[in-house]
Amino acid sequence: KVDPQIFMAFLPHLEEHLNLLRSTQPKSSAPDDEQSIQIEHLAFLVDFIKTEHESTLKDVKSLLDIGEITFDLGWALFVRRTIMYVSCPISKVPRAVRLVRATKIPGGMRPCWNMEVEYMEYHGHEPRFGLAPLQGIDVPKFQGTMKITSLSAYPLKYHPKTEELTETLIERGKKWCGLQGVYL
Image (spheres, helix red, strand yellow):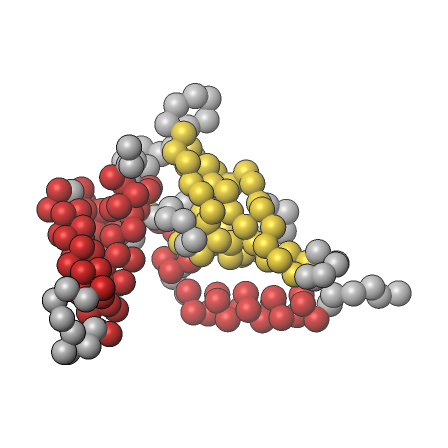
């Protein structure tokens, strides 16, 4: 059984892909060609998700439009492969990481959204740079709504200065890459 939240979380990506398929479809294509069939099936799926989960999607949209979220609707933010904003646990400087998986832990001693993320790391051997896992990033359970930017991890696109932060992180990454090697 597939959790419907997965489909709702990926709905923007599905709609984007549907628009891409429609924009690249030749005007003279036959209704039974492969791309036309893909468009028909994807359009059906998108329409089904929108119809079946209309009230939940409206709730999510209204919250995201004002930059807020509830704990139970966190799945709308924590979509695999999303670039997330976190603070380094040691230096407290901003970091960008890619979300691998988010798991909702609703009960127990520490209810939270637990995240597995990956970040760019220097390995010292070929390939010198690659992705490394980072564990222990949690968004603790909260009541009511919360500003997305007050969460311990959230999609980078919600940062109030996304472009400026992105440029800073890229420059810091370039400097870090330039420091590879052994220095005496």
